[in-house]
Length: 181
Image (cartoon, rainbow, N blue to C red):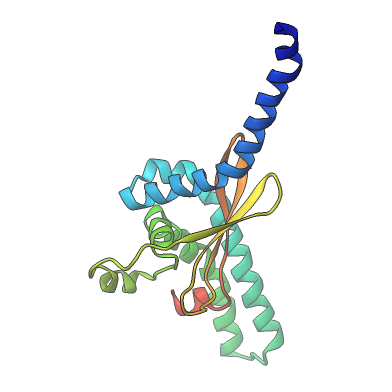
């Protein structure tokens, strides 16, 4: 009897645990990130978000967008200088913008807010964002807030980190950083 349990029972338990982890862990990771955002727990946010990788990805994305715009436009003289200065300003802007506070607000509300919008948001809290999770393989998933008005929303992209998950990338709708929301 004990041999049958070793042959069939233990593998069945292991398979059930792996399948359970596969389906439940993204929701658990998102719930932990949302709890950290709601409570303002910067330590948990730092553990759930790979801030250096997130910043580097946003910098690369914004620089590529700006470079493509410079190449396709007829910038000459001062306009070209302005574009070059804009490219140089991306790093400090993203470094100052992607903080535990702004990421917590993004997780709570489902959208980015510029610092001047924060004073407006100090009014009674808007309804918390509901996040839809989509698997992208065994080591990656994304979460995107529901949009009642059909507006394109930012997407959080997570990658497996051991048996847990880390937020590593933001997929922002076109123009999000331009308009500051």
